Length: 487
Ligand code: C2O
Ligand code: CU
Ligand code: CU
Image 1 (tube, rainbow, N blue to C red):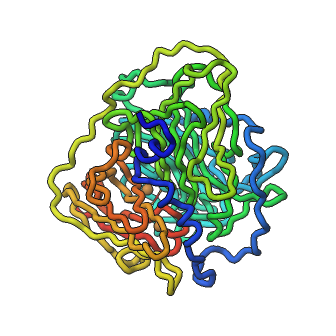
Image 2: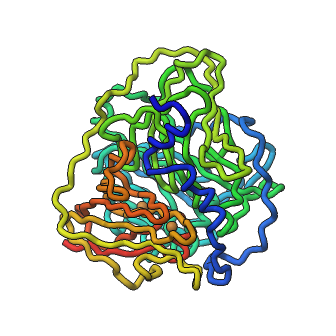
Image 3: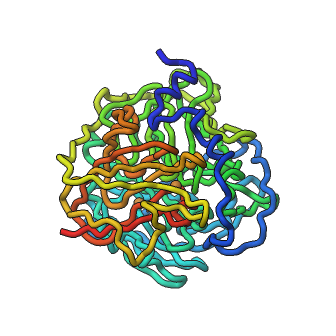
């Protein structure tokens, strides 16, 4: 049994070892050329506070937004705007949000479409994207379709795909990184009959946790420095700093979702606790992964089950980031075991099979690389150009993408996200994926010097879709490509 921390790390999903991880990255990543940054020129950021004392505020557990139900379709209106919110105790923070709420939650049902009227009342453009969604091109939030302030647009999500945890975020041309940073992230949980039939924890024991980092000024305002990823020491869970959560002594399903711009979380419970990972981006894994330390790069999701019945009432169980940067407090949140409860749930040995997507017709090369001369991040030597089509996949054809991170000189990690369909990891460095990476994915970390091959089949919808690094500052600095899928 691998119960030492080192042992646990060695079994973590995405080939992570602490030595190869963001500490090295943080210290060796060059500052990008400020002059070429498309971010708005704001005043130099005041120094961030080291982070507030942990466990001062309760977790905010979001209940789902209520749709208007008509003819088997769920209708929502989502207005994006700036609002004042309380994130840190005793302070008011200007955020950008959906409907004035931090980390709102939509729960959708497979087979029942969701239609959203999105009204943009932000001072900047906004393009709503359902990350992980299998949706037509005109509802995918292409930067070309971004909404100018004051405009609205209808988005249609068919929800024909299998159950998974997704999220809504901005995909506008120049403002997405800042919009996401300032709070525009909504959880989108899709359920289905298959999952209903499993004895996993349900209802109030199924909780969505949006994790992210942030930097706050002394007055409580959010500090957005596009290159400041090393100086975002505050961890927020559903918009609250390092909260506590009162739980019953039973199993919980926790849907972890990393909405950070660039932060990597490697999650573990302090002490003897065990995390069992049951899903990745695209839904349930084929089988549960015991003694997991889920690693979440930006936009990745991981659902886990934690059994609090192994702790006596009165216990406090700390979830921490094993990849905290030097000097950062590692605490993410705390579970306070406060009461008994019945627990009919259990984790089945088999969760959901992942079907092979068939023989690949072609293999594409995707090389990710930072260009120190221009401060841009490139895919196959090129920065994003909305008027250029990089790949032309055929609808219904299976492809292999061989993704290489060529940034060995700087040790920069990348994490490639592909729109429209989920994929499977074929191999990582020539070796089969670890169990936690054996499910459906839509975002995959490729660390410096690594090569990861994925298999993907584009289905149902033709048109223009994006693929990009989901470290948002890299995406902002060019690391995005465009494909035109044709029937
Ligand atoms: Cu999460 Cu192209 O986005
Ligand atoms: Cu996406
Ligand atoms: Cu990147």
